[in-house]
Length: 148
Image (cartoon, rainbow, N blue to C red):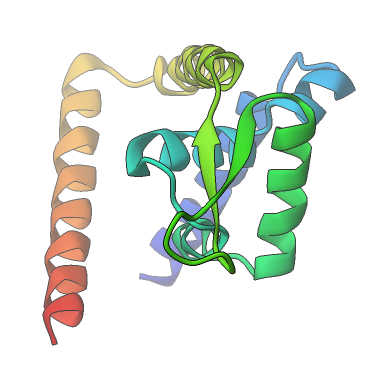
């Protein structure tokens, strides 16, 4: 099991490196993997609060604020006051943010394919089944915790 865990850490490093390969510093600043995950969550959630973004990304609120500030500055997000509670600020993805999200997802997929292309079709299918099993188990455990 220790070797498997070590391999998973190594694989995540390879993915991160491949996702950022060939990028200029401007690309990384404007569309890092964390920015893509943030934009994706906000697009999917429909105007979440800053707190919800931080919780979803499993990061501290000040870190989330820093990411959000950059995305707002780039024109990818808008801050919107909550109509029922003035203390809450909601986030909305802009048209430009949607474009950047789609472009970022496309770039990540291309780079991930480069990593996974060394696997045969049957190995890819087996890996897909394994990952699906892990994710399904995680989601059912998370649902149990949420329902308590």
